[in-house]
Image (cartoon, rainbow, N blue to C red; front, side, top):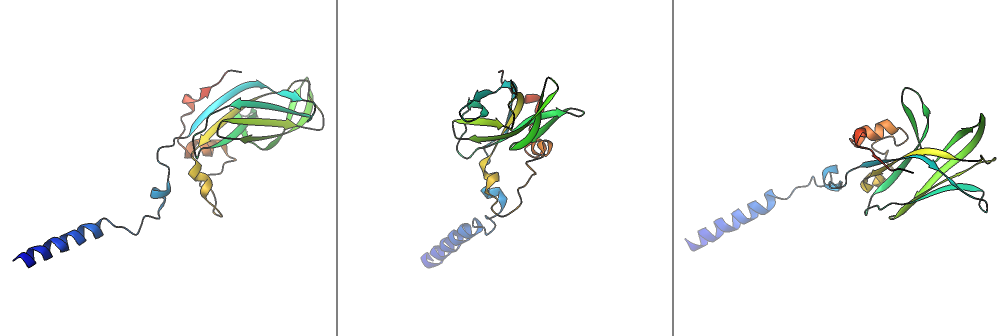
Amino acid sequence: MKKFFSLVILVLSFGLVFTHCSSDDDNDYYREDRDTVAEIYEFPNQIFLYDPALDEFYLRYDFQLFSGENLLIYIKSGEDNGAVWKLLPNYANYIENNTAYPMNYNYDFTDYDFEITAWGNSTPPNLVATFRVVVIPGYFAQYKGAAPPVDYNDYHAVIDYFKIDESKIKVLKP
């Protein structure tokens, strides 16, 4: 009887172990960072600083990112039934006093700040722009060789994909 009882315990133990094992743990559910939520910030009417040594404009912000987060920065490039947002890096005309200044925009970021730079063949007297900064979970950058899950150039597709409520945009004053 002791042998039978021991055998039953052994079979039940193996049964419990193997029913909790699964071979489908390579699906996206297990790779996703489930506690990072996309956020959006707006920086309206930002006045760029000019660095004559580099012949470029720049904006630098202290901005805390958590491990694995990434930034997408969009510039407001006009109005067409609402704001038109273009992903940086980008090329756009800056208009001041009826004069067009072709400008290139780019950005970089670290875990504690980001910087937006702008340069062109001619220098406007002032450079002012509005930006939206979208913080996204870092695991979306891990699709090596595969198409990303959303077209990052399309601001509205990004907002929809990450389920960002635009009524809750955090507006940061200049």
